[in-house]
Length: 216
Image (cartoon, rainbow, N blue to C red; front, side, top):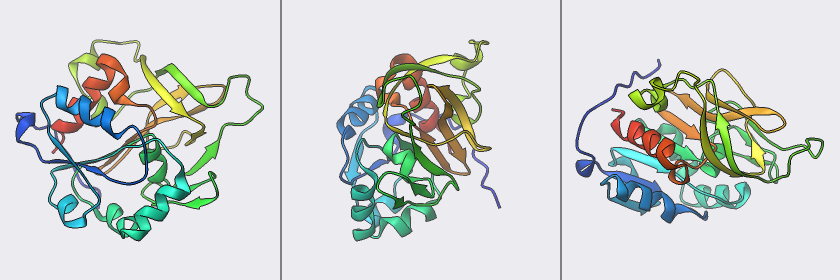
């Protein structure tokens, strides 16, 4: 049965927000972005600490197989899919929520039943995909705010750094075109994911992080 989530209106400084610790970069940027919103975080791979957090963020820039090795060592590969509180995967964190990554042929967490593919050399754009690009077809809890509703063109610029992508599917909550259309984000029950970096995406990213923090 799908879990229903609503928006809560509480001071962010009372939230317990945990970031999943594993071999990946860019974690400090996420922490700094949350600090600007008045949120203190803890970086941990301890299962009990994660279990007691109100919100969990799964950030990262890195390589899929190395990350999965650490998650398996800490038994997080089994634990993460059982979480019931809101969880947000960012960049590599999003890709690890899929079922399989073509990056070193890595079995991932299987929260979303999609494969992570590598950008083809046949596209004219440079790979990796680095820089600002638009997201369109916005839907779901991460985009439920006046900020997005006041932009009827439903198109926002956000910041990407990646060589692999998840194709567009039923649970995509936003789409980007970079020679091929792919999932800029995904939502399923209490699991939310973004291929782009909200912590580097100015006002748009701040709104998305605020929306995630408000989900209960």
